[in-house]
Length: 194
Image (cartoon, rainbow, N blue to C red; front, side, top):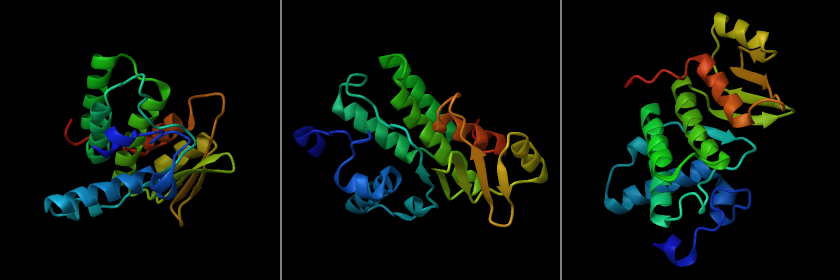
């Protein structure tokens, strides 16, 4: 209701303000979910599972021009924040595309960010970020086979610290799509419900 009265502003864009800017989207949605659950009297144990810190240079939002109804936008954000299965994300994206047309790039990034979170959680990855022209995956355990595949793609693999530094290619898909492809390669694309 507060969003309706004051407006959402640039909630997911580059010009984030206030609490969201300070803590980031993932932690903000987790804190918001916990507050809502506490207000309802629900248990918050499900929300305490390991969160993945995703810090990639891209916009992650649903534009007002794409989805004009504030309530529907907030509902989509909420469903994405709560999604635990890849099939849920795929179904929600399909529903949006059926109702509103092809997703703009920022919305594609938003859906892919959720896929990254789900796949990373399954693989035990604690963070996905950019540093020195590489996508850094912290907590990614690599089998011998995966290590060889990643090294073929010029990635640096550090088995002792469970860190992978994957080269960010500027001429290909954006950082979000590249991070997602690495997690798919690592085996985070298997959805047990499918």
